[in-house]
Each structure stands twice: as structure tokens, then as C-alpha cells.
Image (cartoon, rainbow, N blue to C red; front, side):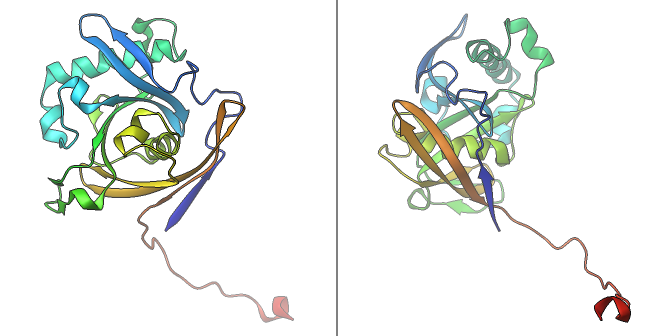
Length: 220
């Protein structure tokens, strides 16, 4: 079913809290990375996969069993949170595990999903992997997909560039367990980006069916 997220950016928040589509994020002891930091759906830090030593086709076991990698991601998340203005010091990040999310992107590449399904390069526009609560997510969180769709619609972000650049209203991205199509309606007014709606397809199942008996006199 199609799910629409209307006005996914809080009116009191800037979509790009630093004012930039791409920033230089310095993480002491680790490096300096290009990053797109966005508030849409959920605060998210996007990195280029190759900048942090990945291809963008990784599955859970490639990262979640590597304690050193998880610690690096947490440091990136903490310093990114400070730069986004979500916390005042990196020490506060441990008490704020839910945001921001950290994700990394790469141009489309084929891979075998965790389900065993082959994802072909021609089927997707880019690959995205995201961490949630300190671990690589098995698929993609819905709120992070909103951030992906929004960033993809805005030329110049790392997500947009990984998808091939230019203006676009939707992208299909590969994640560890498959693919997802997400679209966004973004507009630029005097240099300020805004997004009116983000749409995506989500699976659904019937949870309950039944009968409701209505008295005849109610229908009269």
C-alpha cells in the first residue's frame, strides 16, 4: 500500500540544520568525511560508503559482528549530532540513541539480499544502509526512508549524487533485505528547501475480519 508522509519536516526545524547540503564532518581519531545531515522523517547523517571503507552492499553480519566498526559509527553519530545541534557535547550521545541515524550510500550495485534474492544493479538507483540503536538495520526504517526520499529529491546531497544527480521525484534503493521505492515533492524558495510530501510503498496484512450487527431500527 502507498503511505504518504505530509510535511515530514517540523516547521520549527531547519531541513538542513547546518545550512549546507554537504558538510565536512570531522571525527577526532577517525577522519574527516563528507556528510549530508538532514531533518526529514528523522534526523539522519548520510555518508559515502567508500569514504568509510564500505561498498554499500553490506548485510547485517558484515557490520554487526565488528565491534570496532560499530564503535566508529557511534563516534560519527555523536559528532554529527553535535554539528546538527541535537546535543551540546558528544558525551550526551549515549543518552540519545534514537537520533540521529547514520546511513551510508553508494551508486547502484548488484548484490544478494539477506533473503537470498538477487538484486540487480539495473533494478535500483542507489544502495543505502542504515544503523539504528547501534546496529545495522535488517532492512530500512520507515522514517529513514523519508529522509532518503527527501535527500534524493534535492540536487547536490550525497543521496542525490549517489543516485546519479539531477532533479528526481523518486528513487528505488537497495537495502539489506531487498528494495524500496520512495518519492518526494521538494521545492526551493529563495535558497530554502522544503518538502511537501514523501510517499513510499509498504507491505500490509489483514489483522482482523468480522461482522458488526446493526439493529434494524438504526437503519430506518
